[in-house]
Length: 502
Image (cartoon, rainbow, N blue to C red; front, side, top):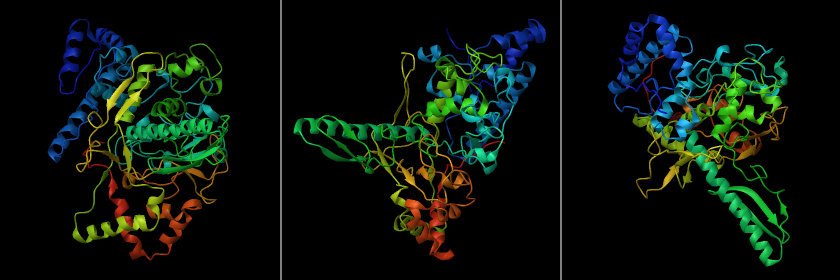
């Protein structure tokens, strides 16, 4: 089976199709053709970023023209844009699509408006719900890009975009507010977590082996990429004392996603987000049959809305890949000499005030090969983030050829004090405990903190407590002029400049 594709640059293709189908039977014939079409790239998303303004402008205008044409086609036959994303997992497994094409298909799904006709929501549930009802969620948004837009596609969300999780469906006080995080660099974040998990688990195996051979208990520090996660004690009988583990779950799996650090993989984020924000159930979740999540109607349509296979496995894969291949945030110091001097001082202040203790500027990466394991025994989907990610990409160090990810995070949970504490635990994580959010791209991702309560970075710093209280107090003791360098430095943590159309 081969997939029908409309590649970027073939601007006449949709209209040639229109002419030929009308000639063969008018609009009825055209509609039938659209109903039969398979997944197809439509040229509205690209991983490339031209370096010059003229090239960016041409690309932006070309993609906008394609979007306009595709909207016309969707007006002729509603569902055309939806069907263009319906790639089958067997096609991906067979290698019929390149990484670039899969990225485009994922981007099309990321920007698509979901409707009742394709399965959004559930029977006997409101079409949209601001306050979530348990694990079922809203739905509270019509598309992924509705909440991930600040600073560019797949960016953060504004305060009005906060999701109100795990509530009773009626009262705001029953919910947990979460501000949409930026998705930039997500694949690198997952790769770091995978490697850190492997390091921590290797220490556990080492401790078990040593204790069994030595005949006495041993305590070993848990270190991954220079970050300490407490310690672990093992006795000769193989009993493991996990009471001194810090900043990570007892299973030692680094979970880099979610404000609480509770989700290990991008695919889990994607699948859960499709369900709770859009009421779109994946094939996999339906097969699992978890009633509190997917509904209690049973069979192939557990939410009872009359639509089966709302999100197929191939769509989950391409949307996961799209998020994983998002661009690398940039550090862009100011060009003005006076501002540049403030920036240099702010970089030193970042360390001096203790910010770098949790927001670790740089972590080493052994491999940039991102892997999406197949869930049903087929081949894994892989991509080299240094060669196939969206531009700009991570590049080896010019000094020694190593990979260094400057995400400004330790991917570890910390206690942040009563001022930021929530009334509810979140998947077993204490109300005042949060993972260190990466600061890369932070200048383009406000508002700040887990619930968007901080309109500026300065507000966010001053609201820190708990383990970060010393840094917050040191910053608070500075006068406005003395705070300026740190503000300038943080403003340089941004995304690459890109021309886009509305």
